[in-house]
Image 1 (tube, one colour):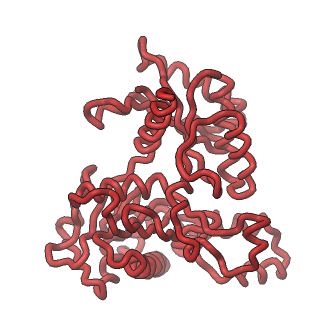
Image 2 (cartoon, rainbow, N blue to C red):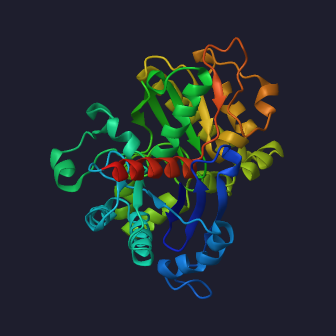
Length: 383
């Protein structure tokens, strides 16, 4: 089955065409790319035109074959969507009603869904939600200690994000350790420009660092992560608008604020060269992450593994080392030689005597979305 995976942004459309039945993962990706500057001078007028611009790239690899389904990454599924769903007009409208919960993401996701429906009206589409994996959070983990009407009227609760990646990586970590997915207890760390940690118990998410929005939790490339909510009140009283505060915390904070760059490689190089601000940024980020790891180790009743994934988690040996150095109380011991190895395969980077294995497990959200899409479409075809 050929699945076109779509990740729609407000001014971009990332795509990947995959053969989910390919014998080897290396041959599964037929083509991939990104269409940028949608709605801007020099770019496609809208997402529908962006899809038209893909025709040549797709035709070059399809030959006589045809696309069987389209899978979409949708950031926010709210409380309604706990698993991938086959899309129809009612589902699109339901996703659109969640726009206030993810104003930077869901509107663009809806544009992608409608563009495909317009271009290929009979094409099966599946929505795969970033929040779905975290629908298993118990109430004591998802509820905020605020008046109940904030939840009942406005849906203010912890949702969690990066769920597709966390679920995929937890499953691969379990396979690497030789246990069934439903028997895996661990802490999964998705470390990219966006950063989140998830406590996995029995293969299910029972806590996660992102909350009502992706802003909560850990230090990220440009996001602040956790901070005293009274800071927002203070800034409002100082005359800053909601939009200004939103931009400040989502676009101008995190590593960018502390070190002057949101690129981990740049920050590590600057710290190694003696830049005090870069060194402090790494200290803040690694300290915050170590605190979450310790808390989630308790939450899962003892982690069988701590798993690094995504761009920084997979590729930044120096940052992994800084985090591991803070986990001595858990009996964690890093193997410097193993940690220095670069590989696309799951691997152990801790020493044999480490009380908890440290793993690096590459994520592949496009593969996860494609496989989920194929599964939903096949079930639907069986009636």
